[in-house]
Amino acid sequence: MFASFTTDAVPEKERAEYWQEMAGRVFLGLRTERRGRGPFFGMLEGRGAGSLWVTRLHSSAQGVFRGEPEIARASRECFFVAMQLAGVCTLRQGREVRQAEPGDIELLDGTRPGALSFETDYERVVVSVPYDLLRPRLTDIDRAVGNVVMGRQGVGALVSSYMRAFAQNVLPEPVTGSASDILIELLALACNAPEAGASSDGAAVREARRCALKRYVERNLADPSLSPATVAARCGMSTRYLHGLFAESGETFMRWVLSRRLSRCRDALVDPALRARGIADMAFAWGFRDVSHFGRAFKAAFGMTPRDWRRAGRASG
Image (cartoon, rainbow, N blue to C red; front, side, top):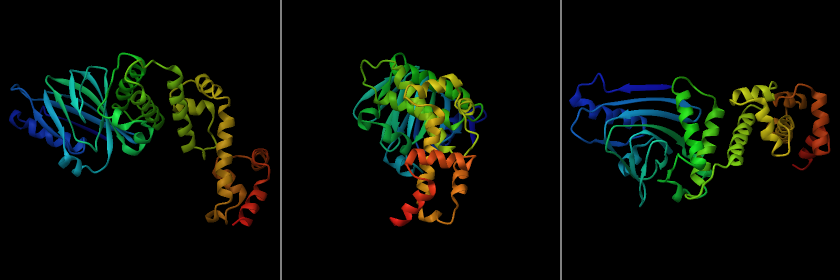
């Protein structure tokens, strides 16, 4: 899904009102107020990226407000993660007033009132993140919301660079879900980092990428063609880098995939709703190509054959 609009073809005296209406649709009911007396202009383009919505906008000076009436009209709960590309944003959500300069990243909670002010023309990227994807990853939501992550140092610099590249790639054409997963992990890392002294922790970034890889695999375990090469290509990294990520945690990629498939089969074997399904059918459904290999791997992992496991599960009710 792609959205794009501009005020260029709208009569100047109607542009601010047109911008209010269109921007309010994209950002779930915000209110805008033009600043200055010069001609008003606005340009916005957005695209879905997995569970996220990415918007790039360029506009005249204005104030942006989100109060209780706007929150009540919103169709869903989400966070707005914004990065300044040009101009300065003064924001307030909660008691603090902060400023974001080009490269800095802001975290705004769409369920709380807030206000933004742009005193000159500005450009920015805004990523709308569903509440349930980011909220569980925030260790202190009250500290994180309304905060500005400096994009010139530490983890913030890494997130700023990735977010800029993400927006540049997603707006021309859709990106994979794994790229969205990595962005969410990096955003959480930046928002959870101490405000002072945050360093560019390479280990933390690799952990974020490892988590994103694992979520991609979990969604695609049923695909028998999963391999280091195919997954690395889908996640935008080299096979060597993928192997390195898993080696750091003391396991190989394919051994981890095997363990996840075995766990899914183990649960399926004792699921009352799947009593009528054969053992081989379950193995194939979770990506195994050879029933004999499945049987040997299952016994090695759990100490009994798949048939005995199923029988024991039925006996225990």
